[in-house]
Image (cartoon, rainbow, N blue to C red; front, side, top):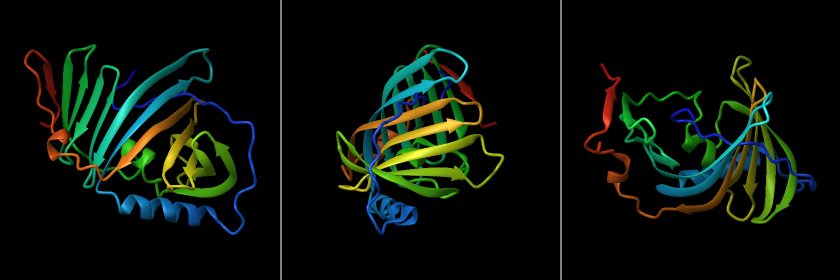
Length: 213
């Protein structure tokens, strides 16, 4: 599994209900962004799957995302850890016993964990598909298409719960047919995560590769 990637497969849902009358995709995304703007920090627990188009292979992991405004986040999942304080990025692999250190680069075209699971990217055009009853409650389903025709992603679907206007499921399809899904199991906001969670202290004995030079 590649570092700094969160991979999960697609689980298609079979029953869609007509979306609430009067709401547009822009209305829904506006509520999502306003909810995100009121967050100082958050902790998201999620499962991840990936399904490859030309191979009968599925991968599944569980992970935790902690984030704080100003591009700080920490992602942990099965032997992988990615931490950034908004200036430096540490990517640790337990399998390789190695940490890569690099400068944080803000790329509005990239899909960081924070962008995927908290605030829908702004460089996509959105369409309202339906409303759907889920185990967590009534959700609005949106389909997002990248405005850049050369983007690696083909499409993205978001499930936004009407009870809290948070994204609780994401399905991503890339240009090669790989289907990736993020399913949120819990989403806690404004819990007072300390800044120290976004700085990685390299343990003794770990191989360090510094890419900042």
